[in-house]
Image (cartoon, rainbow over all chains, first blue to last red):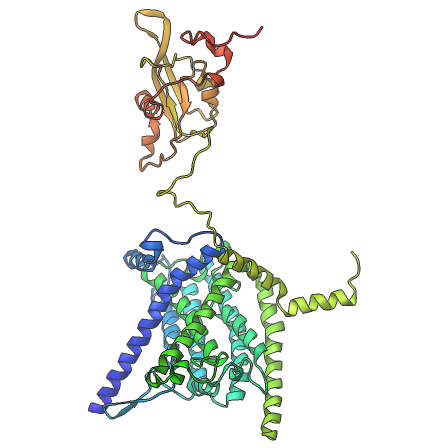
Amino acid sequence: MTELSLRLAVSLAQIAAVMGIVMLTVMILTLAERKVLGWMQDRMGPMEVGPYGILQPIADGLKLFFKEDIVPAGANKFMFSLAPILAMVPALIGFAVIPFGPNETIQLFGMTIKPFVISDINIGVLYILAFASIGAYGIILGGWASNSKYSLLGGLRSAAQIISYELNVGLAIVGVLIMSGSLSLVKITDAQAGGFWHWYVFAFPAPQIFAFVVYVISAVAETNRVPFDLPEAESELVAGFFTEYSGMRFAFFFIAEYANMVLVSCVAAALFLGGWNAPYPGTILAHIGLEPFAWIEGVAWFTVKVYGFLFLFFWLRATLPRLRYDQLMKFGWKVMLPIALANIVVTAIAMYIYNQFK
Amino acid sequence: MAQATTRERIIDWLKTMTFYELLVGMKATMSHLIHYKPITLQYPHEKRTLPDNYRGMLALLRYDDGTEKCVGCDLCEAACPSRVIRVVSAEVPEEPTKRYSKEYYMDMTRCLFCGMCVDACPVDALGMTREFEWAVFDKRDLQLNKQQLLAIGDRSFPVREKRLELQHPNVAFFNVAFKHVPQKPN
């Protein structure tokens, strides 16, 4: 009984820490996106709240918190309230299997605890894919329940888009799974240790560079970001599926979008770029004799990789115009899907031959 | 259109495969990020220098001795394309040859700041100030009467010096005070 409650307390503490970090990252992202976008367009971005506008996320949060919560006439109230939750929970729940740092264990009160991953389950990748698909329901239901044509069109577009690109994400990951032989993100990350030439983008028998490109493009599409932001195309659909949402419900959708970006970046870093592994063998802190602090370097590398991805999202948004809808579908099914399938075939053959001669 | 050669088509295909055009665009945005020179002016904190001929808020002007310039001729009302101005003209008491504007109204909600009233005024009684921050909460605050317009003129032109070089010689007929204005050419 005591052990159970202790385990519960430790897990809750880990969950609280990860949630806090993710929420903080989302707050930073909302500011960073506007800043980076502004700098790229010769503007300044938010400058009013606090020095250089750094308190803007807090001001935005307070504003959304105090806004009136409007349910449009004729909307399905239950579904309307359910949709933001259905969008946000899957986005946050995926972080449970992401390894943020080295696969160390510490002994605490006679228990073995992994401090940098909430739960190391052996179907980690599958779990993330499953919950990412549930996130689509939030968008579709939100669009349908709003009783508005723009929301409905946004929801329908999102449904078609997520089905098309979810598939490519899944198929792009398969190559990595063949090479690592595991679905656990911890095991996959551990297998990439020892220099950047061991990362699965460059790894020897079958470099997953094409799968990586397919994954990044599909991830952008899956998170409804520019240039694939058709579900919320503001010049066509007002705001897409969250046209009718206001106040905290809108904030939930907003957090869901940014948390999804973070999640997708974390998965990309863990699967293709070696997760918390440094691009050189071992860690500098371990080499100079600070072995107990080597985890700091691991976490720092993971953070750098994730933020690099997030910067790529902003960069793409500053550069590219939105795709037409048929272009989106054609690109997903006729370009991305064949590349992902061919990558699986090539990887499988390469791994088979490699294992024969090993 | 000329037929693309095989070489050109191979180059096109390679460009498509390597996202060449996207990378060019991304290079452009990145160069803007690195050579960051914002053109933003933090408006309420810093204001741009207005050009000399800026057409801002309209105002009624006075002579140096404090008398109003307006003679109530209604030409501004006639010139205004948006019917902003309404003038009620009257005789100056005990001086039957002189007239003045008893009432003078401007509905600034309609004004498009074309400056035609200023051009039309024969005595230069109207002027365009450099004020532009006239956002109000109540629309009725923009319907100005004579006192308000004179007050705007007083605060914008505390020193009432005529800019003689801008004045048309025809105007000299009305402005008897300025004898050194050149004669009307024959």
